[in-house]
Image (tube, rainbow, N blue to C red; front, side, top):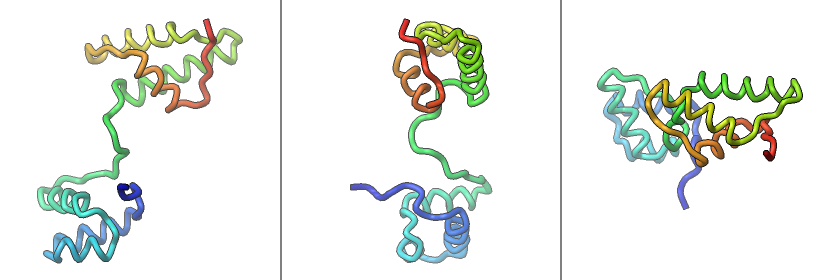
Length: 127
């Protein structure tokens, strides 16, 4: 079974990167900090290139920007509060329009399922 993600603080990661930049052995730093070797190696390599990395969530990026998803969420919540809940296909259709305008991509049922998982405050009408 894999190691739990994010088991170290930002300060620990920064200290480990500094140790790596000071040419300490990566395996020793890994053992001392419990930061995965590959993670540490990537952060140190990027630091040597002058690239600042942020801790990221695993998995692919969302198809729509954070701002676009927040606007969709706010629209659905607004309709819910006004007593006009959104049906699944309405939300999917609106998301497809936005995705096509922004980047020419399409979104489908999988995107809709993950969108609802990311925004648990939403409830959709059962058509």
